[in-house]
Image (cartoon, rainbow, N blue to C red; front, side, top):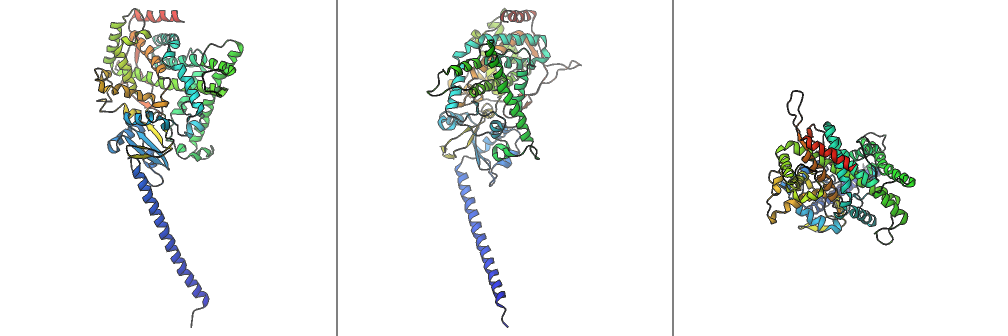
Length: 534
C-alpha cells in the first residue's frame, strides 16, 4: 500500500530543508573563512604587534596591562619600535622610538596632528574644547596662537619678577615648616599660574581655587590612560545610566564634570566681578576679556573671541601647568634626596659660580651647566606624562612599507624614548653626567628628552615657562637649603621610594624627607628677599 501523499510531501520537505541547511552552512562557512582570510591579509599589511583576536582585537592583552608604557616598551624587543594594535575595530599605533615619533608627528604633522575623541575626558568630564584636546581647525589655531604668544621665550621676561617672588616665598615657607615641603611646592606652582592667568594671589594651599582645581585635575587623570578606557573604545557606554550596575565610571565622570565646570567658571566669574568693580589686576584673563569686548587681536580675518574661549584658554593654563610642573618638582626633590652626591655637586657649582652673598637669578642660567644637566635628567628619569596626549591620523598613510589606517590613534611612548638603553646606558640610574661630553652625532640624547613635551604642532606651548618655573625655585633651594632622608624616632633613616600613581600624568606618592636652611646666612638671604619683593 503506497504511503499517503502528505507523508511523501513531508519527507520531501525534510530532505529539502536538510539540503538547504547544509548549503546555507557551507555558504556561511565560506563567507566566514573568506572574511577571516581578508582580515588576516589586512592585518599583515599593518605594522607588527601582538597577535589580535578576531572582533576583540588586542583588548584581551590590554586589559591585563597595569603599566602601559613599560609593557609597550617591552614589546619593542619582539615587534620593533612601532607596534600596531586594534581594539573593537579601532586602530592604535604605539611609537616607542624618538626617530619614529619625529618621522610621523613632526615631519608629517599635517596629517598626524589631530586628536582622537576621548569620550571620558572630553565628553563626559567636560575637558572638550581646550587646546590640548581640540582636533584642529580655526579654534585650535586661535587658542594655540594666543597661548604661544604669551608663553614664548620672548614673553617669559614679563613673568620673571612674579616667579622670583613666588620662589622666595616658597623658600621661606619651607624654612618655617619643612615637614610640609611637598605642599609648599604645590602652592608655588598654583601661585605663579593663578596670578598670571587670573591675577589671584595664593597665600596657602587651602585656597579654594587651589583645592577645587586639584580635585578636578586629579580626578581627571587618575582613571587610566587617555583613549584606553572601555567607554573610549565603546562610546555607546556613555549613555549607560548612572543608577545601573557597573556604572562607577559614569558616577565618577558626573562628579568630575562638576569639578571641571567649577574650575572653568569660578575664577572666570571672579575676574569679571573684579573688572566690574575696577579692582582687577592685569592678567591673561583680563587681557582676553578686554580683547573680547573690543574684538581686537592678531587673529585670522573673521575670527573673534567669546566667553567660552576665555574660560577654556585660562582653564587649560591652570589645569595643565599645575599638574605636570607639580609632578616634576616633586620628582626633582626625590631625586636630590636619593642622590646626595648629585645634590652636593650642584651646590658646589652654585657656591663656586654665584657665591653665597645673593640668591640666583635668570641671568645666571648659562653659568650653571651642571644644574642644567640635573634638570634634564629629572625630566628624562621622571617623565611626567609617559604616553603623552594621543594624536590621530586623519587619512591612511604608509610608513616603512606598512599601511597605517586613517583614524588611527597614535601613542608616543615618551617613557620608552627616555629609557632607550642604546642612548641612555643604565636608564634607571639617575646620572646627570650622561649629558656631558657628548659628541655632535650623539647630541640626540639631549633632544630626546624633549619628548616629554610632545611633538610637532602638539608640542606643549608652555614648556619654556614650565622649565623657568622649575629652574628659579630649584636652583635657589639648592643654594640655600640642605636636603636628605628623614629619620624615625630611633634615629634611623627612612628610605625614599619612587612610587608613582596615575597613568596619564604621573604623581609621586607623598614621601618624608629632611630639609632646612644650610646656614644662618642662607636664612637671612631668604628673609631679606621676601621683604624686598613683597
